Amino acid sequence: MRVALVAVAIAVVLAGCGGDTYTPGDPTPEPDACEAEAGPFDLTLGGALAETITFELPSCVPAGEGWSATYPGSGDWELILDVPEPVLDELVTEGVSATLTRAADPIVWSAAAGTFEAQRFEPPEPPCGEWTVNALDDGEGAFVTVSPQPIPLRCG
Image 1 (cartoon, rainbow, N blue to C red):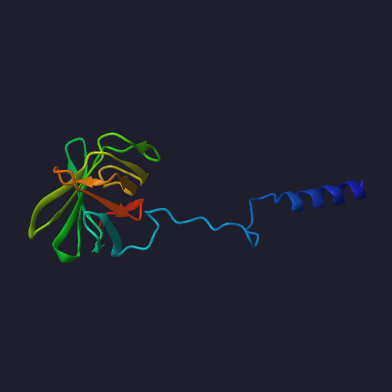
Image 2 (cartoon, rainbow, N blue to C red; image 1 turned 90 degrees about the horizontal axis):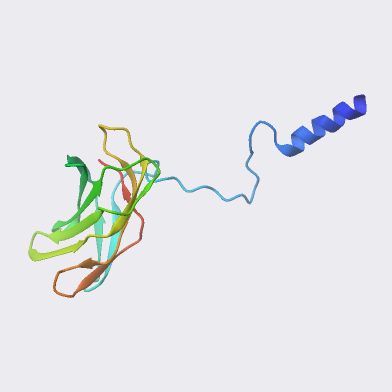
């Protein structure tokens, strides 16, 4: 009987009963966009524009059946994200659009395709998560890429 109890105790310890524990060498999970440090971040433009822009956290407002987030950027740049009403932890692939403008420049760069994943969303509060965007187009055949992606959405 005593041998059986010792064997069960050893099996419980080896199995990690009570939850997984960290073992050196285990990958450390990346924080999601909602847990990441708040503050300015840089996006690098490529293609027709080669520039790095520092963006602040966006201001977010309800927009019809979704949300609009406006990121103010250095050099009078502004990045606007429009997303339909998200579902928590579901990848939204339709209705996501982005617009990039600069106050001194009449060109508007836009893309009607992208993705958004809400990692936190409790209406009436704005969603928090990450988004991607395809190359932005000026409407005359020039394109701009944005990196790195995904881009955090954490309303300030």
